[in-house]
Length: 483
Ligand code: DSN
Image (cartoon, rainbow, N blue to C red; front, side, top):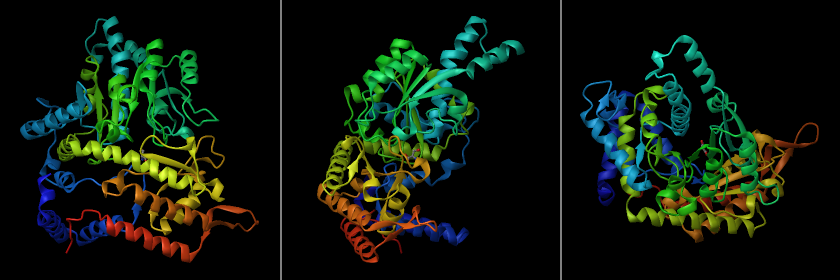
């Protein structure tokens, strides 16, 4: 992190870059400045966002973007890949060290892409390869049209189970609007209605009855740890492949907060992640595995489902993984969780109800019905008061996925700014006082609107000022001064 030591380096790098960009399209240089100003003026509590380091950001803006490199290191469909090979190999080696994985594929462009690579690898390993073997063929092109049709039907006729959306699961875990739901016949497991936590006995019952090929664990809005060892036992008992999407909590795995039974890499057959959430890298994805027979199938991700790898982003992934391998990252990961607990406590002591009654990770899910609001109203009122969150369904949500009854709060970004438990208590007060000063507007028929709201100007302005104070005491990119 050499660049961080010299204040003028970071400022010079970005100011010069903006000068160069401004010559071609001044508006874009202005919008890049505007985005920084925006990010510096709001408390960012979106659980899936973070602030990557200047080194990570700068590694993405260069001529690696111009190079095609379909294939894998040493096995490309294009010549001239000497330095892309070095970058991809280093990123993969760092990912393996960081997550204690035997294999790491660093090409996916996003979390959706990483999941798609994983699904096709599982299908190739579990369905296509045995079919080819039983027909004594090496390649799909060697099959007759009739056999190919049989294989195609079989690939499209497999089952999966994943966590339901209102319990905190993700669209890419087999839901119909996503390609995974069109590909697999999916059933979801939810949470216990009383505790709002995962009930492994009922997941086991579903698995035994439905007999899926794939069991997916992972979430984008579940505030608790998941026992991946128990999930693996269930998968093994029915011969299913166990996949974990750790996109949200990869930073907590890298920072050794989630270990042993809670470590996805040690327990799953295949693990996917994004690199830009709690892991604090560039926007992108990865696939990891400790199963030696999976790697040859995962390696085929490009061109099977991915376009050419983004070598500039793989370079930035290598930088981010190197940063996460430093001992300070473990401190950071532990602080994220402590801050989430402090935020949860601060909200509860001001009368807010939390889904599951607390948190064990980086996120807190608040039921805003007790404030008389929908998630949509709470989200908008908080933005007006300088706090950026997202509305989110809660288990068995009566308001559906658009208006919702909850807001999701996450601490990775504010923790990167250096905020701690005292600041989390102040953030909890800003949030709760804003929600208490917000009420639904009446519709023309006299009912409460689910979207329109009234917020006291005085509370809004006062809380904007308090949010601004926290941000000036804990500035974003303190070494960076734009001219
Ligand atoms: N968009 C991410 C999130 O906010 O959780 C998941 O895809």
